[in-house]
Image (cartoon, rainbow, N blue to C red; front, side, top):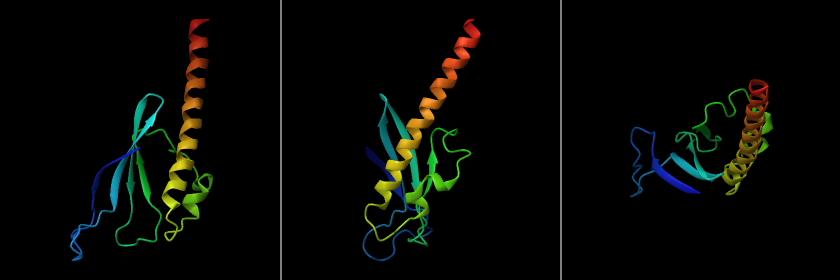
Length: 114
């Protein structure tokens, strides 16, 4: 896993602490010989809120209810493993999504080739 392009969405990211605050970044995750890129966006004005995600695969979670991601609905900003838990659940869902897409492709291939 690689973290790239950390930056801030706030108008003034330097809050006077001698460092820039970053509330968003991209994760590059190796998956099945390719890289999956997910953007993680925190609300810099509300640090206790769970993050939002933008996925490079627009069909992933396009019609999903949040209750299938318990670590996101039960987000605990004080738990240092909260983000890891969410990403782990999202990876499991992404794997299921990929398998479903592959099975649909096989089904359509069988129909076309008959």
